[in-house]
Length: 147
Image (tube, rainbow, N blue to C red; front, side):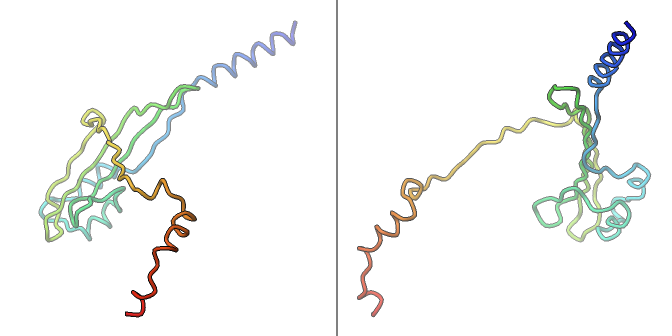
């Protein structure tokens, strides 16, 4: 009887701990105290690097902006992980490298972007490498090399 009670206790403990959520943080968002040091119109890109650190991502165009992205995910047992919070800090620059704006965006500001898969068709895919090499043997003209 004692063994049954102990095994039920162990089983219940394992069941409860297996179903507790696990939280994971991804990315980096500078603390609010550090962001308060960034003054639009005064802080340069070089100063920004030492004040709040390098960004998670940069804009594609030269000098377009720095983006700090942080998110928190909840993993709950066998269920699909769920993003419960996301924050993006976007810092934009003037052409001379001075900060012009600091913006914050949350998960509620996001939009779903549908990605389209565009693939360029190629006529090479239906013909293997060996077939291409062997097929070009008869097309070689030695006279065009000598001219």
